Image (cartoon, rainbow, N blue to C red; front, side, top):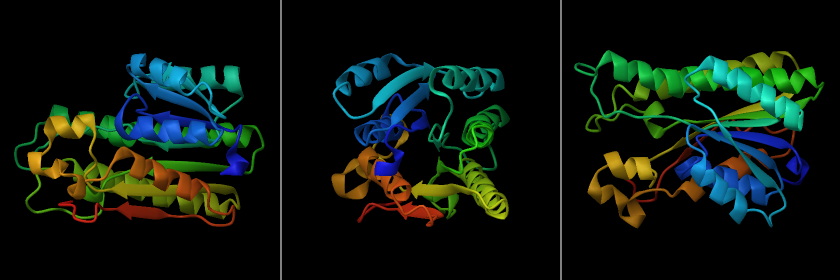
Amino acid sequence: MDRWAGRVALVTGASKGIGEAIARVLVKNGMVVVGCARHVEGMQTAKENLSSEKGRLIPMKCDLTKTEEIESMFQEIKKQLGGVDVCVNNAGISFFQDCKTGTLPDTKAMYDLNVFAAIAVSQRTIQSIQERNMDDGHIINIGSICGTTIHEDVPCHMYSPTKYALGAFTEGLRHELRKEKTKIRTTMINPGFVDTPLARMKGIAEAFDPGNCLQPDDVASAVTYVLGAPPNVNVRHICLHAIHGIL
């Protein structure tokens, strides 16, 4: 991780849960982290709590479902910091719906955030890296184990396709960057059930037994693992399960 000290990381959905944990660990490793979310109040407290660390946290408000706000955010990052070297597309939403009756508005909301926002942020990150003539960087997309396996008895059948799509995009992007002979790497991280505020709102009570779920810091550790790999190593994808997890 030493080579990333002082470099700029953009973490989406950084106000709580997995995103907050990722932003925190990157700051502790010396990175300048732009944490973006629709609500940044919690990040202001996190910024103060991290003030003595090697890196720093810069909260930025952005609704990732609005392309114009993504554009404005990248312009502001360019103005303040020069550009983005690493993006972690963590922001996402899940509705527990089945394929037969899931509503189109809810399905569209999932695709807008889980897929299209991640694509837009990834594309703009690569543009930022290349326009500064940098030859390295990293696109890290946070998926889900539901994006690798269709679970028969888990009501996420309308959510799973969004994470499958994100995985396909990540792998397609890897091929394109490899052909260009760049050192920009791509990684898909697929965690199982994670104990987050959103999951607690929507999950099953028994899932929150400590042995049955991951913690946000577990996913954050996977992010530092892939970033810390030697520059010639691209960790393409990681699947994380709690040792006794139901997912």
